[in-house]
Image 1 (tube, rainbow, N blue to C red):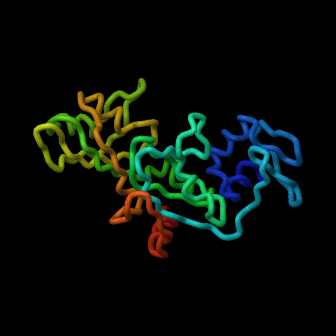
Image 2: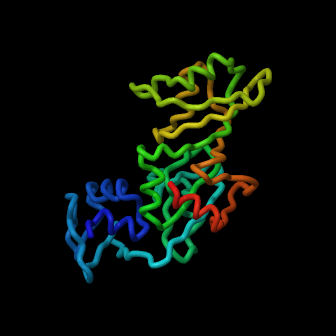
Image 3: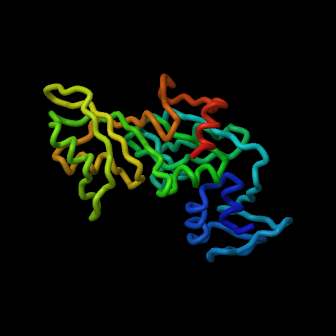
Length: 234
């Protein structure tokens, strides 16, 4: 089995993220650091990530977590900030988030040890939708919402077509539903900046077929069988 696929089967990360970890020199096989792709792992070999052995998980776990603002979605933070994985230190298997939510954003985050599912949900060709409830500064006009839908320039290239629905306007802010299927860094915030506004609050309420519902902030739950079946259709 190729090393990146082996890491994904261990629930370490998606294959793409595993490739990045390999390139960064964080992975070793039988004590030898590997930095090239395509290395094959044989039965009985010891694979380590950051010096810790990893093995394929026989049982897959899938959790929905309502991430609060003020947590980063990485395993480690060089600034010493709280991470979402701090909440799961005592969980019986090693979990990783599927994608990311900004430090100052909240909402639905999927955690799993299923690297193949992570790959399917994040691969650009799948165009898995992510829906955000956004509170935006000042009054957003229908024409500005249409600009978001057509695409705006973010970090030197146009965003893909999106959906932008105005839920309600007030003197100081506008509530919107914004749907994207890309995964660029702080994308929704940067899109809103391109139409002359700022995101005041951002909450992801849907990721593919998964809906946040009434799950309280800072709490988590296992996915239902129906939710798991909907993910297998992706």
